[in-house]
Length: 440
Image (cartoon, rainbow, N blue to C red):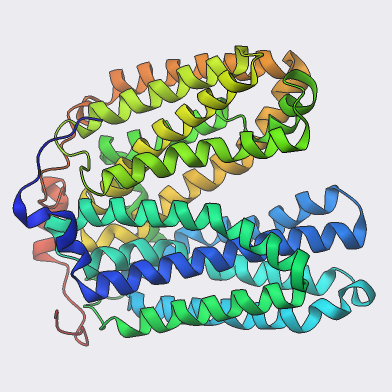
């Protein structure tokens, strides 16, 4: 990572001294713990009922379809309304769903899977609105000069919760049953709801009154396309995960190539998260600032090389080290991408910019698993992985050539990164809403 000494005003402890930031950090951790625990519990429970692997594919589709379909509309809603209120409403929906899961769990074998899938679909709808609103609201909670530091803390806490959440769900399911697991998730979501409620209301984003929804969506897409630092970083994430991801194929490596069985598979699955969490925790004290664009390109290059090593390896320990390296490099790029979205988009665009980013991430995760399976069936498992690493390196080279602004990106510049013609429009036309809350 390209790291530089930070001025006193951006010291790690400064952002943690902010009560509202601490509340939002706890809200994010408890919400992620709950959602990951629910996801694992639902998946295991459905498989126990149906004994059909296809059910798990349907489960992911049922949540992804509404979440991705509503993402752009949710971005517009986040840029026109009180983001705190949106989060309070969506978390409340999640609380109700977790409670209904807990009440239905003892009857699921008799009642069937349709009610469970209906609740998952409802959670997907809530995600379509909360995913754009959450990062946009988080950016309003801290001063702009602390956004980079805050982004590193959020990424680290989110990664830790993402690792712990499934383990929590599995332990609860095995020890006290599905109903109790859902009950604990409901309690965690109530904590998250209380934390968001603790944060004072922030000003509503400015927007053009009466502007059609599709015009707002079009402007959000155009803004992302115009900014090389935004579209370039999103494209790097999309194509590196799409072609360089190997997570879906890890069971095959554990069983047929490395021959380490289910215990070895658990180590392989955890390895990338260990690398990512380590670098994110380091970034809370020394976040990338100057030369962040070059650091991002180097990180994705390192990710591609690590994937190639993993695909070529027949040694378990080398494979684990390669996967830890993929997590480390991906953690660097995650911190930079997250900070880029908050620092390089003005407040009235953050909801739409994050919705576009969410669609990129969702597409890469969903399509990446499908691409991995197709490539492995056509080329062979190991060959498909190391060839995917080569494609990732090609993507980095093309992006670096086509996006010189991304190469030169500097996250130490905390001014709004708004194109000149949009800046003129925002100052001349955009008006703050009349009922905006005062900034505290």
